[in-house]
Length: 102
Image (cartoon, rainbow, N blue to C red; front, side, top):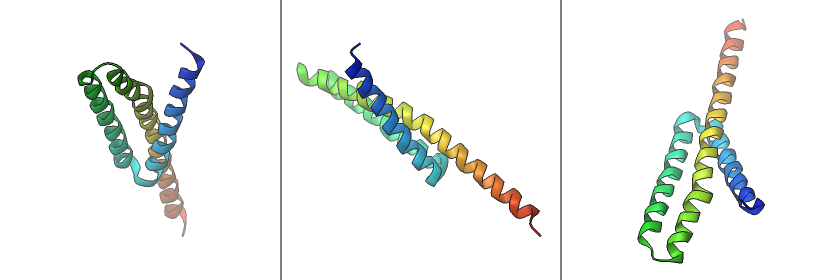
């Protein structure tokens, strides 16, 4: 596989992961799950459009689905999990500090 393709996959993974992390930190697991579901629906829709489109258009839709949206969904899943985990740990630390305070 060409290095440029791997760069595109890595960039999509990082962008999805960063967005998932921010959403996980701000809105928790529900927000991150919504983002992942939206991206997976986009993968499905683009793949279905790729099957129905003739010639090069179908290939373009498949490339969009599997080189952009699928790695972004995977990155959002991982980033959302990490962001939600960090959010929950911070809440636990704050609750423990407030419980210890007089």
